[in-house]
Image 1 (cartoon, rainbow, N blue to C red):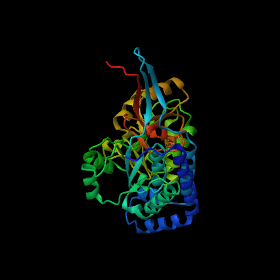
Image 2: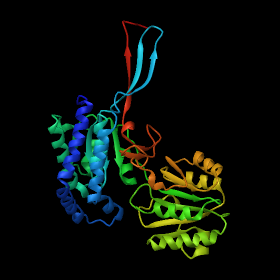
Image 3: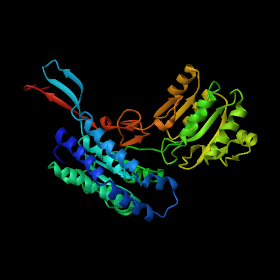
Image 4: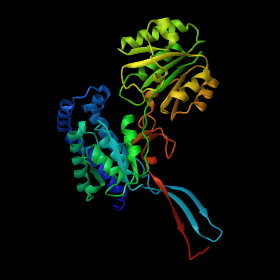
Length: 397
């Protein structure tokens, strides 16, 4: 295990990384273009995540700088206790040790997630997808230059060029100690890691997020939030399902306007039995559709009888990620938010805000749909475990 670097060294490496990303901006975008040209798949969300633009490089630089500005998450006192026998007891945050991040497509993860793991004192093993290999290798080269500049071992950031078989073997019998694995990607990747890993796994789960338009909703707000929820179809915080209260005044006119607006954005609208009959949209082929994450220009609009029915449906079918209620009734919002079992719940706001940067964390390693040890966006302050420090003068029990 690498000896914990001082906070000054960790911050300086991050600031150097920001400078290197700026200096190598053009080359990184050029290398990424080769990855894009080599990608032959038809997954539009995958290709969207793969792309590195000037704006994306700006985000990488901002993430590195912001991480450098944040307080050290390691060694933070969480609890203290003075024993009757005079022992002084402290509980403090501590690094996990080695974190393995397995991800698809997104080169920005190689900066942001690795940066969060590094700042929190962890050695990082990165296993990116083959579709972003050249982009990832360039970014890891920059990490190594930044580390060497501050006399830190390049072992702090390691890239694993493994195929699927090699990855499985490494998960089942790792050649070095791994303390935590974070898979970021689709359901198949997550299932693969859960099946084969022998150490703790944080599930960065699927979206399939719902918006419930309550009978006391402001309909303009509802449409704005739903459209925004489909503004980035490759994001796990995108909206896939809309439930409209059957008692909403002028419900038919609202649904017609919503469908028309969605179609203007080239979003395919599917409907339940009620919606498809009333608005001539394609009917969903089975109840299973309610549980699907689309990652596509597709949305389901259905009718629901009440707030409690909406809560029940969301808890049955959603991915446990994000959900929203649109209503002017604060009591109904409170009921919804307390009882919907998702990592983030919204009242009159877009699910697209489920993001570490947007929720004040500065960045995120992943968005967990697990309940242990952290739920929702995992920021710098969450990528730590804890340790007990007990100071005595010879006490025995």
